[in-house]
Amino acid sequence: MNSIKQIDYEAESPEVPKPFASLIQDADDRWEKFWAQKLNKRYPRYVASEPAQVYAALKYVRDEGLALGERFIEWGSGFGVATNLAAQLGFEATGIELEDGLVEIAESLAKKHQTGAKFITATYVPEGYISYDHVGGSDIVPDESFGHQAYPPRYDGMDIGLDEIDVFFVYPWPGEQEMMLKLFESVASEDAILIAYYGDGEICIYRKQ
Image 1 (tube, helix red, strand yellow):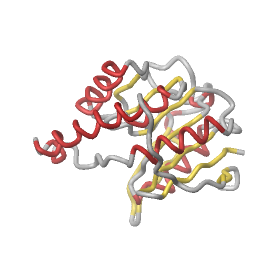
Image 2 (cartoon, helix red, strand yellow):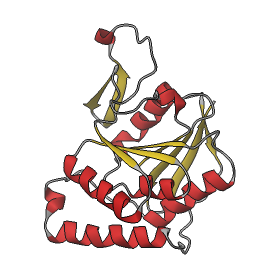
Image 3 (spheres, one colour):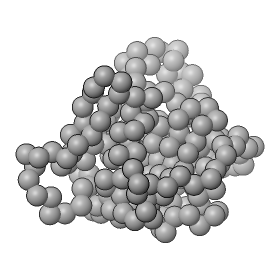
């Protein structure tokens, strides 16, 4: 992946100011209810990130002027915490999530906290690509049956292509880390930013070259 450069960044867990802290606390309360109701069994692949660290990384990208613009997408947005935090920081933020139930929670958070974030119920694998599992992880490849792609990949419900997104965020499963980097390399435009949360204290920021 010669066209991706990692940017020097060390994960932080800062004290989060309002209104970000209010959003995070609300999401935490909903997460507790989610577990109490055993809904985690319905959505076994959903795992929450550490929101203070996500906030810090988003704020770093904004404050350092790393992104060329304000268009943000989260791949696999779950409760939509990262997307809502991005919206509160001034990004034009959209979350992509396949599970309707999780999208409803994310939209409820956005409405209550008036973030302006939007959510689309869809797979993060855009039209023209196929993802598949193999021994040791997952991969993504162009869909040869799709034919020549005359326009940049996009999601239904968005009027811009992925080549117009300035900042991507993802919390991939361990076996999907390389796949998400490959997807970013394939669809992002030059100078786009990817924030990848790999676990507590493990956040990497990349730039497409």
